[in-house]
Length: 295
Image (cartoon, rainbow, N blue to C red; front, top):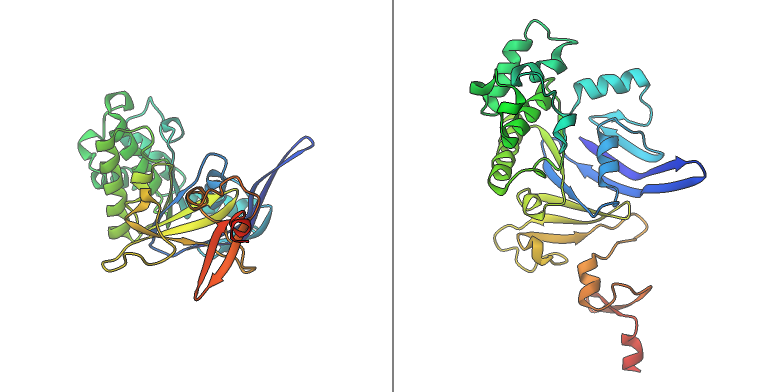
């Protein structure tokens, strides 16, 4: 569904250039539900905007559902946003119009086509997210979790193949977050919908099979859900991801980003170089001054 290769995004303002993505690589299979995590400024929101057709890459390759995102015309890009992708934003103001009812909000994306069936389709979607009984309520009469369910129904209105969720539970309490996550898992399983979630909430990310970490505009590592008997496999796991095995992502030139918690563990987080050693069938990473101590 998604293929990113050496993806670059540079923002230019006056005489200043900001490199938001610098050679990012990512593959997402059709029907997969995965999460992207990273600190503020890591490039995850920039990536989400490009996947959604809201921004164009500066260089590299980006294909979504077989479409070359660098070559789409403005007209083709508009059609892509209308037919291929659905968005769920953390900021409800970007999802919902407050003076409309839940049903009317869901009908809006269908005004350009499917107009005759829009009311029936809106009710089907509200039923699917458990809000059929609240269809005629205005937003002020709905809880935060119910409003986010309406937002999910809106994102599904035009039958997208890809659902992008930007911090979908960021403004919700723990119980409501679990309900929203459960709903996304259900949609993924029943509709075969590809879902990409951007989040800083590690507890949320742990609920999906694959988590990709982005740091400084590049894919840093991947966490894959452990299977029974997997203990001790792979590169290792951060304590926050004891349910997953962590793998460093290596590009075609053999470059990797060592996860920060590994550098912290060996006292090399702020170092400009580390000592590498090949011991039997393992590559060992040590602080640079370890070589001096052995001399």
